[in-house]
Image (cartoon, rainbow, N blue to C red; front, side, top):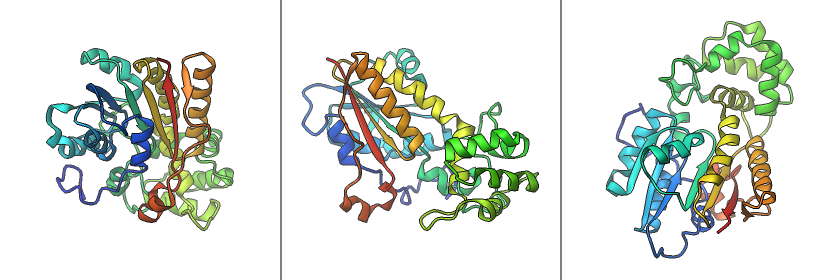
Length: 304
C-alpha cells in the first residue's frame, strides 16, 4: 500500500489496549472532560481506543512522520473536534500545548518504536523485507537536514558503527557486521544491507539476522533515545496533578531509560511508579496478536 491511500484495513491491531486504558485511569466513566496526549499517534489505533473509552476525552496526537499523520487524520476524522493532530515530537509537548493553548493533560501515552505502516511501506527503508529500495529510515522523510541510514552506512567510522550496533541493536557480532559493511561500501539498497547482515550477524530462531542491525540504524537516524530521555522528563512536568504517563517499550534500551526516569522522578517527590515490574501482554492477546510479544508497559502517576 502506498502512503496516502484511504485503505487502512491492513493496519495491525494496537497492543495492550485494555492495559493502556486501565493504567491511564480510563476504566471508569469520566466526570469531566480530560485531555489525553498520544505522543506517538501512528495510524491512530490507540487513539481511537482512547476516544471510544469515554465521550469526555479530548485527544492531542503527535507524530514526527507526516505520512503516518495523514493516515491518523483519516482514521480519526469521525471523532471530529475531539481530536487535534500536530506534526511534532513528544519531546516538544510543552511547546505544542502552549502554542495551541491547551490545558495540562491528565494522561500521556507513548507507544515507542516503529509503526506497522512504516514497516509495510518498503519505500521508507525500515524493513529488511525490502529489495532495491534505499535504506532511508527517517521518521520525517521531508527533513533534508536529517541523515539517512544510507549515509551512516557509507560515511560513519568503523568505531561509530560498532557503537550504534552494540548500543542500539545489542548485536553480539557488531564488529563482524561492521567489517562486512566496510567491505561492501558503498551500500545503496536494502538488499545489499541484508546480505551483509545475513553473512555476519548472529543468527537466531525467532529473528531475521538483519533485525538488530535495522533496529540500531533506525534508532540512530531518528535519535530515538534522545527524544525519549528528554520527552519523559517533559511529560512528567507537563501532566496535571494526578495525571498518568504510560509507556509501551519494545526494546531493552528504551525500557532502561523509562525505568530510570520513573525511579528518579519518584525519588524527587514528583509521584509514584505504578508498575513495580513491566506489564506484559496476556496469553490471549499473544495468540491473537503476536506483535505484542516484546511489549513492556510501565506507568507513572504524578502527585496530586
